Picture 1 (spheres, rainbow, N blue to C red):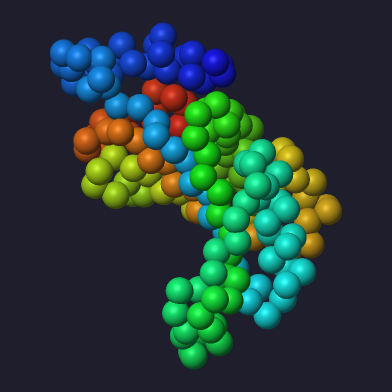
Picture 2 (cartoon, rainbow, N blue to C red; picture 1 turned 180 degrees about the vertical axis):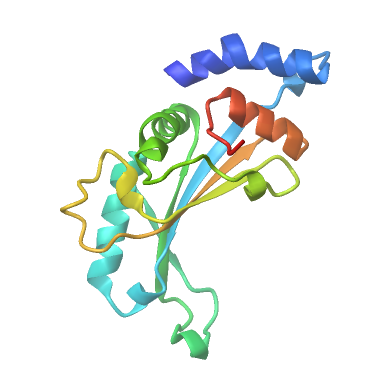
Amino acid sequence: MTRLEKQYREAVAPVLQKEFGYTSVMQIPGLEKISLNIGLGAASQNNKLMEEAVSELSAIAGQKAVVTRARKSIAAFKVREGMPIGCRVTLRGGRMWDFLDKLVNFALPRVRDFRGIPDRGFDGRGNFTLGVKEHTIFPELEADRVETPKGMNITIVTTAASDKEGKLLLEQLGMPFRK
């Protein structure tokens, strides 16, 4: 059991149960999965950039990234069906808890001029999506070795029924939302 998972079970779950008046422990919101995604429109022509992104995302997640391909052709973007346009990885279980711990305690504080995350990334069902402009904030990547800094999306899928429950869950887990 990871440090953050232990904190969730011992400190966060009771707070959520008391706050929302849950009668069963199964009603308490938890984390389901975390999905990481790097979209590379420009990499459809540059294969080296795609391989670099896959290896970097795999290093960040601790799990092999999968190349995503275009579902349909779009002439304006010079994209044909089946072309590689990004990479993604889905984390569950222990790796998910480790990644969230690393994101909250190491990566986000390394962002320049960081004042907290805006809370407008919720989708109405308690899930939260966060965009990171540079993936070099993660400790696994050495900033001087990375040729092109890439942006990435981090989606945290929870079992919460509403945004209010999801936000309280993430706040209790240490997510630094803007005040």
